[in-house]
Image (cartoon, rainbow, N blue to C red; front, side, top):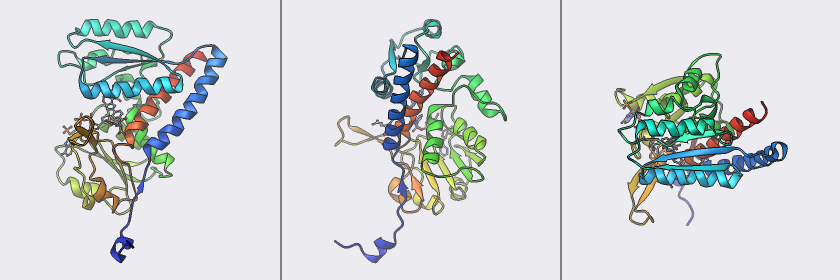
Length: 303
Ligand SMILES: NC(=O)C1=CN([C@@H]2O[C@H](COP(=O)(O)OP(=O)(O)OC[C@H]3O[C@@H](n4cnc5c(N)ncnc54)[C@H](OP(=O)(O)O)[C@@H]3O)[C@@H](O)[C@H]2O)C=CC1
Ligand SMILES: Nc1nc(=O)c2c([nH]1)NC[C@@H]1CN(c3ccc(C(=O)N[C@@H](CCC(=O)O)C(=O)O)cc3)C=[N+]21
């Protein structure tokens, strides 16, 4: 059926295909891993540490481990029972710090509540902190003229999606919704480093809608499915959706499907660019983890 004139006039955002961009990056990494292996007789290694058996964590960890194998990175699978003590977990981190075949260490978050997340993160060698979440790496990210050894993967994925889509950040107004240590805060710091003017909104921010409406670039990282509506967004803005929220869907194999923080169907009609969930920031986060591991290994091997 021919579209009505109203439909023809309706603007459609450019959908940023994170899955395809991630695939391109993964094949670039694969080539570099082969070169390293020929030159040094060694491949990069990544330890992905999973404590306990949370279903969502297990599935993310499996995606990460599979992605490693696909590009030729050696995956060290460390699965630790829920009841592990903080001291035992830290001893495991020390063992991985000392293992010369391990170039990156990722401890999947959240950890069980009896373990102090900060105490564990502090023990990861900053040279192997491919998650970029060690306070020294975050601290350097926050300081002018300093560069961390690694940038956090989800935030780095957001910036990479913008740049690979030809969206410049310099001089733009960016609004980040969320201020967590893992996403909101570091993505704000990265945008600031890239010369955006950054507003960080959170659960105590009044007038959120009108703040978002000012933004050329919106980064959504709140953990609330479909929270950001079409009429909150400025015409032609770039909207990057970090949210990965499980919503019930009986037609899905698992009974759940991932949903973003953005009301995709509405926002598509207003924004200039938008990332989908699934297939947006998620796959790019994993590609950035592989890239950080490669970079860490290169740095070590070239020493
Ligand atoms: N694709 C990826 O690579 C990743 C995706 N994620 C996903 O991103 C989302 C956020 O994760 P994470 O940062 O860990 O979550 P957290 O729960 O740690 O943080 C959420 C942040 O959003 C803010 N917030 C919550 N509700 C509102 C609201 N109604 N209005 C304004 N701000 C709000 C909170 O404010 P306050 O600080 O005041 O509490 C907080 O700063 C989740 O869906 C998660 O699954 C997370 C990591 C990586
Ligand atoms: N130390 C640590 N580092 C992290 O980077 C980290 C973490 N802990 N804890 C949890 C969050 C979440 N996260 C995601 C990674 C990939 C997808 C992803 O690939 N999602 C796919 C599919 C998801 C699905 O089908 O369920 C997509 O969006 O297309 C999602 C979420 C990393 N995190």
